[in-house]
Image (cartoon, rainbow, N blue to C red; front, side):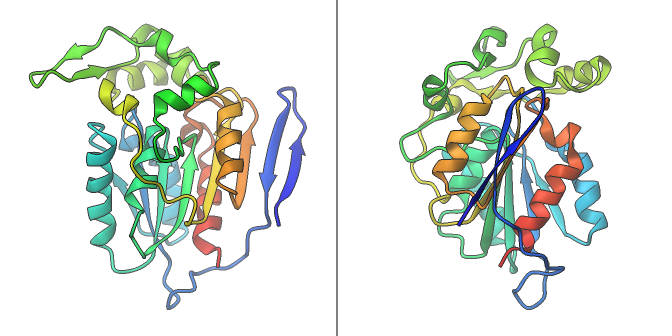
Length: 264
């Protein structure tokens, strides 16, 4: 049974939540799960630094995977092999496009106990980042992309225009930090953003969701839709947060991951 809670703020926010079970260790032989963090497009593994600090302090083994950002299928296979190399329980955490990757990567992986979507996409079979955006067309990412870079194999890499990156992607970080992020952003192939998911795991694996109310890449309404559709154990909208909620609110994100890890 899920509790629906309204979070009052100047940005009217809705929070869906169930009580998280308090525990200090996972039920699998007393071993804390390994946390695998999967970044999305236009970011990198360093975007998890604040979250890593909190999780590591609390005794979790953490791996920040270097998401190739080439294709949903290929990127998911990469993460799935990483999961398969770990003998104990795993919590998969995905930001943005990384949410698509973890949903596919967890299919058939018996040691994945939870999925955490951090401003992340959770597509159903046949859906893509692009098609989900069409259902909730208030996101502005498409308007801020730089001209694509054509690669030798005919595919195309896309970036966010550096001059538009701050307001589009990370409006609640400092301008100087956003400039560094814009310069070091990881591109994604155009085809990956349009690639439909061939499978998903959020219907059978417990999920948790967190996002910012001022996310301009994936609209808050779309996050809410995906969380409700997934029957999320807990779903939190952080008032005023941008798409990089894991950078600006690392403790809130880490706390949610730990609740997912400790749930039985």
